[in-house]
Image: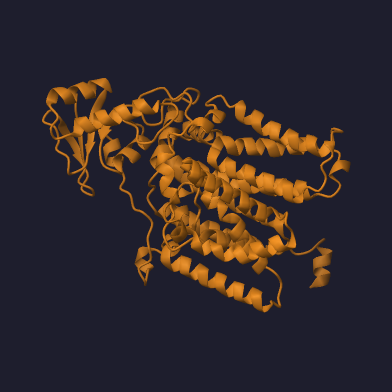
Length: 507
């Protein structure tokens, strides 16, 4: 009764639509993430945790028995994971697994805060979450930094997921500041014109830069878009505030002792592997184009609309990556879809009655979401045993705990195949030849190591040649697929009935 409510001292709290659906989404995706074996880059990130757990201040190379100074994997995000692993006693795989729901929480709260800056419409964040996870394409797009429904089952525990969540928070804070009325008249508690708040925003961008540098590139483009779109005054105090934000971001990134993030701008060692990002773009992303009409409406209303500017800037950077051969810039493609997806969500969150054009757009968006769910995304949340139509399922990688029980932490392994070299370092052992490039190891040295491992595993290698390679890299273990011949000097210790792989001792 109204009288009883009044006597209790206030209104009854009711959750917003986003709080309800966001909580349900958090539960479902967390369970889906935990149900799928960790795969792909997870072994690399688990290895980083293991090295920091062993030595928090001076970790070794993530995958090799080498110094790790200068490795960008040792970010504030990873160091906090390493500290947690030391305190809890958990291993790298367990810490990466636990990081998934935490990153998802950062992401969901960031989306909610960001959309509220774009519009007060209560259903807009719900629709934005749906569009961001379903409106991709009809071919699987699986990269770190891609957060479709399917890729979340594997990528939520990565630093990129946390960085994207922080990016939404940074855009929300930037947009709110840029659009605030009377910025020049705002004075903080210290008597300065709100400089502390701008320094905090800058520190957040600096943190994103350290956690995942390529996501930070997209984050900075977003900051430029929101400031250019909504900042109406450019008097000296305004320039000072944003200058403080930019300076704080640079200072925070520069002061990190583990690696020089600005040196990565000249590093092209991973460009070759990112060329694939530009292949099959239409098949992987075409459903997001359903947001183009909504983005066009925003552009018609304002040539300085931040989502329009952000989309244009992202497209220009992606195009530059293709033309220049710096294909790593294609890593921002996941965030390039955000202006399309969120503009569509804001448009469809408008109160009824709808006109004919909006009804047509809503029908197309609903159809697109169904197509995305049934072709690529649905298998992320529908278990195989309950799947009536044969949805595409997440990748199922084998576990290498059976091998890690015999190999000591820090011992060197020579391995072949696709899964084992990407997984075994996550348990603590090292590889003779790291799979991924890393600025902490000269790329020419890594290629020499890969050539030596290839020569060791060649069927024409002699025992003397194999012994020389093993001694050169202090290798004592072989982890071989069932297609490889076990050398005569090796002693088989264990094997996997699941994959047929063999663990053998050498030395």
